Length: 367
Ligand SMILES: C[S@@+](CC[C@H](N)C(=O)[O-])C[C@H]1O[C@@H](n2cnc3c(N)ncnc32)[C@H](O)[C@@H]1O
Image (cartoon, rainbow, N blue to C red):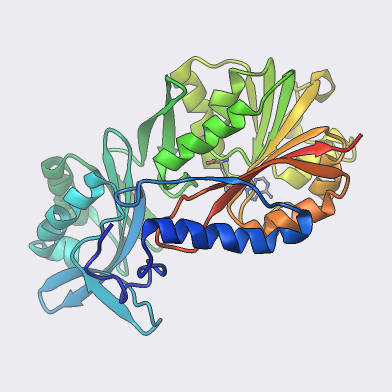
């Protein structure tokens, strides 16, 4: 990828390395970090190095009557005006100038706009406009015209107000091992930003499932991994803290005709208390937790990693499959799981041109 803003824009910190050099650098950093855990040989799945981000957020810069998208500068001092960003998928890349032109011509849409968020599915784009002003019916009328002209969904957000033109979600399709899954992805909820790498991660997890009975999944989000994994297991119990992500997950099950998943809106900590019978929860009425025979547990926690109580709970499982967006907390958590050995370890390059890397680990209890 080449970008005219390399060296100035804070979004790409590895701007002066070729993609192959970036890969080598990431591998070296991870080797160093995991040396004490004897992780030496591992593979790294590469991304396409441009047009990979299906979601992106830009600030808005006002210059008299004209507008620009903006990103934080590499040196951390202020914002850099940009016309485009080659990291975003083509759908967003093509939409950006058209949307800017529409907003620029329209005082109601332009005034006090400070940021724009894009979310793209294989079918449609959803754009959120963030304002420092209240939004009224006249804003909505203008926004409807622009949404129709550009064929997008538009959301206006200001303090405590959310106005939705068309829909506040997209339906995305993802091909996993020749099967296509449909997902409802809600605005503001967590979703993987690089669809190509997302499919790679899911396929890697699927490759490591053997002798499957029931699956316990913590941090399931909108069911990104859960839906394809459900095909390998008799039953799945999947939990997640976000109410809107669970609602999306239920809708996605319906869209795909999947009936062997029980989604629960519960934190990992709450679920472990429930499974250990320390607390009773109304949300669990009618669900017989004892009827599950879990052969695997799959976790994909946020950057903070897994809390100690949940990690202690995980120690009763023979196989833990761990996807991590933060190698530091992955290392900390594996160290806590001292009776486990790392059977497989892999990196997924979700964000080329940045230092960020996702990791996967298969952890097996030592006999
Ligand atoms: C890295 S995301 C992974 C989501 C999903 N696996 C995916 O691929 O889209 C982590 C998820 O954990 C959820 N989460 C954060 N803290 C949690 C907690 N204490 N208990 C359960 N879920 C939590 C977040 O809402 C988020 O959906």
